[in-house]
Length: 149
Image (tube, rainbow, N blue to C red):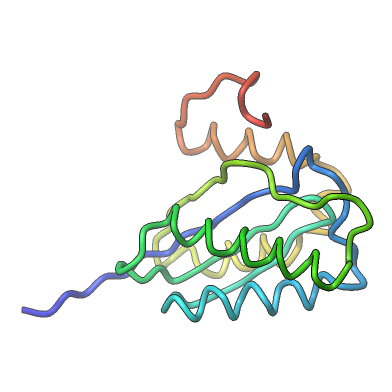
């Protein structure tokens, strides 16, 4: 019998200390680079977006790679790329940790719209508030002290 899966994940992570360094002038190139990394690991990128301090990536997940390994590759490779291209004048790094949230097929269009509307969304809501909303929505217990360390 073959192996068949249908797994959709939204991955969310921020810059170190939520520093606003993902400027619009290079953000699209960053997203394209992230897409290439993710596709090289057999996942399908459905949407990618964010603001100057965080990224949302919505993927059709391929079961042959663990989520933490994918995140490690994306963060490591983009950190090197950002440094090599001198897009950030200070020391750049991603914040440790990430969120990974699963969705059903019927939710795909809503998640894509949400990610594509990040700029507008964050005129009203901070990333910290957004992230806590995700944790609450999915029933994930957390201590607020440790969310963004």
